[in-house]
Amino acid sequence: MITNPNVLKGLIEQGGLLPKEEMLEVFQKKESLNIGIPKEVSFQERRVALVPEAVSLLVSNGHRVKVETGCGEGANFSDNDYSEAGAEVCYDRKEIYSCNLIFKVAPPSELEVDMMTGNQTFISALQISIQPKEVLQKLMKKKITAVAWDYIRDETGVFSVVRTLGEIAGTTSIQVAGELLSCFSSGKGMILGGIAGVQPTEVVIIGAGTVGESASRSALGLGASVKVFDNSLAKLRRLQNDIGSKVFTSILQPKVLAKAIRRADVVIGAIRSPYGKTPCIVSEAMVESMKTGSVIVDVSIDQGGCFETSQVTNHIEPSYIKHGVIHYCVPNIASRVSRTASFALSNIFSPLLLEIGENGGTTELICRNPGFRNGVYIYKGVLTNEVLGKVFDLKYKNIELLIPRI
Image 1 (cartoon, one colour):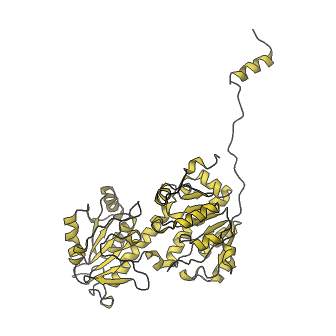
Image 2: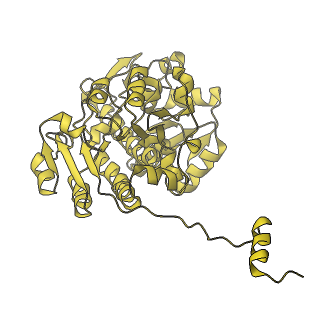
Image 3: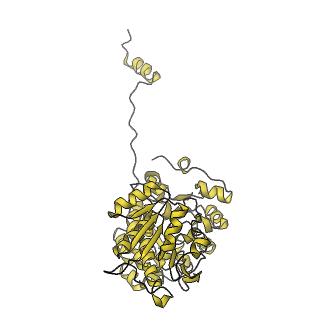
């Protein structure tokens, strides 16, 4: 029998039975962020990434925020508003793009990427259908970590930014339709809704997602008669449950849809494709069958539109008439209510930016937060988005293979 303790210890070690120290997660110290908010230069983009109230919250938590002069003008925020909130107002754009975290609304342009110093975090929208390959390559070359806010999920798995902006677009689409129905907009001179003794306006909504649900809720609130079409029974059922009132719903059957469109005063296109291109749902013949002075609002126009007669318009000349039907096809409909949209974005990103600081930086949050990680399409210069890789024929890697294990 072996009684020597040194011999016993050696045998236990050889057998792998010796208890070892537990490896605990080591948390990084809180990091003070240097956040840059540039002025949007995209055509008719009036939103701003952070409102002064959000800036005040970040500054009070020890972060530094630089804003480009005039960045909030489109949403009716002055430089003085930002200065009083604790932001540094910069007159040189390059100073904004030298910050370690740059946050803006629209996707980056080549000129904006050229001003970046490298090894930074860049947060903005990602519009795959119009994203130039050269911009992606420059971001990769500068070792940028790029995050698409429209791909970030919250703790429930929902694309929170897309949902919020969808709610704004849906509500605004009904308001726009109401304006276009008036006789001063070449419309039928009708009120969108219903009053006692008068037949209510008939509204057809194509798509039962967030935009469609918000549009339905707004139209019903005004007293309109609403019909909703979608190819997903689950979405139609959820819409009925969420709205809490009986709404006509139907699968996209051509004959049923064509009949509804012939009778409609307003048709809202709210279909959204996960593949970046919306299918054409309403043919030109269907549009021709509509009543003169009726209104089409194609919220899906940023993905190509779901009406065969849709053509991209803008906020200066937002509508046109074809086959006697008024068409409104502005891609960036949320910019019409830029102040509301800016507050909505700030409400989502203020806590997220605070979380980045609390976790010790962007890399740490990417490792710990799968919802935020889902929005990353370039990680330290490496493309991590499969769709972008296939669309632009670029090499990509799964981000799970790149991030450190914390």
